[in-house]
Amino acid sequence: MDRKKFLKKSLLAGIATTIIPGSIKASSDRKSTYDHLMDQVGFNHLPNNKKSTPMNTVLHKANTRGQANHGWLEARHSFSFANYRNPERMHFGVLRVLNDDKIAPAKGFGTHPHDNMEIISIPLEGALEHKDSMGNGAIVQHGDVQVMSAGTGITHSEFNANQDQDMKLLQIWLFPNKKNVTPRYDQISIKDIRQKNAFYQVLSPSADDQGVWIHQDAWFHLGTFDEETCTQYKINKKGNGVYAFVIEGNAEIEGQSLEKRDGFGIWDVDQFEIKANPQSRILLMEVPMQLS
Image (cartoon, rainbow, N blue to C red; front, side, top):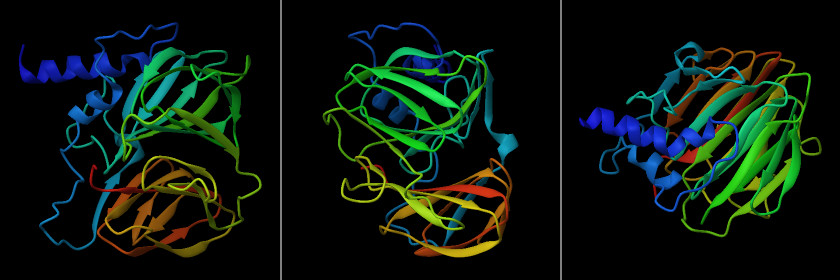
């Protein structure tokens, strides 16, 4: 078997459980989520520590994303995932997966395993019914942010909680900064922390900070704008970069025009300017550019 076919087979075996509904049992010889996804990184967006470079950017237009239609699930992949594999679109630093999913009524992801990944879900429309091997059962709806540290290993399922309408969400996976932690689950409603025409923090590395927390030096900010707003974003930790995702509307970052569902990565900067236009919603994901 040639290397290309081997890599494709390995990737499909490792993450196929994320796109197949129904009950799935974990196998003792299953290659871990972390290892399968780590096998695929290193092609781009990991700056060389020995080389000092000016500001770097990468643009991923919405219509260049990977696509999948399973009937019950329509997905757009900003980075290589399942049947979509693009050597130039593997990851942005420790940001490995950014899936834009639409799930049909009462359908979803059957019980499947994960380990050693930080998993963030942000519903955009509707509600998601979650169950996991830690004993958690919850409804995660628009206006919530959910996180799971898979750590030593978990199984979970996710289904559209509604019988008569589609559910839309962003599913985001980051490599952790420490492996084999005790699995954990959390979710919050952002209604009490959101701000008008400004970015507000929804995720950080600290349990004492605003929003949810994960095992990674990452900071996420959301912003919803009903008027033109210019703001400066300051990097929280040296060596981090920011991947911006325009959920709705359009915006401009350091002179780059962005439209709905475009992704834009920027690194090797201390701060940068964002111009958000009216009727826009934007997610900023600050992450380390080096895998630890």
